[in-house]
Length: 300
Length: 42
Image (cartoon, rainbow over all chains, first blue to last red):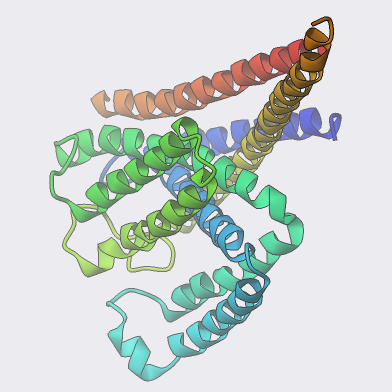
């Protein structure tokens, strides 16, 4: 494992450099926005990566909560399975399709719904119960980093294109900021609370926080917003060459996010190891102190 | 031409944020390893 990480890091660095080359040199210039549109190759992949990490955090938090009781664990499996099956079937019913906003593809919605059981069972299979909380804090922290990039690159892109840094009251922008604030408060809670209930409270907060992700994503369809339509699964359109570079760029960022998550996961394990060592030390100190009491008294 | 400044600003900002975060990970790793070593010595 120790040898694998530097190899993967090297390959990811090459992949990121290749994605940067494609973004700056190979991708064609946009007819309307000119060169500045190339911010899309960092802004959008960062947003998708942040959403994916928050989604994994949501699944890990749910699993952490339901695994506390065997009965809820079994029930949750069935609920997730039903959500997946019913959700996918519902997306192809004409009545449900009529309710979808113009431009939203039913196949895109079905794929998103299908990800819930897929990730639920995959995470449950890959991570033992005592590692779910570690996964949750890892994905939340790395997700906040990617979300910060979205919130920084967005205004930098908006200034030359819209003429303003930020559109106050715009639902897409505001909901993204709220999402960032929710996960920052999640990390603050985990950092500064020493209660035995901290992990459970954080998991509950993460479940509610994740509800903001669909609001951010679907806000474009349901509300009037300055933000352009999405390039995949929605009403927006994009040159295939640009889309190709965008997907490559996302893949490169996904590899990078995976390595960062791996490091953060190991850091969290090390942190718990240090906490256990401190607890053992104080326990041994306490036992030694108790053991020394009769010795101190014996001369009397 | 002026807009290109914004493009580079966005790219640089992205890597500065990633760099700061990676730096914080390295710092925390070092701190925890030292702490673990100190606890082991005791």
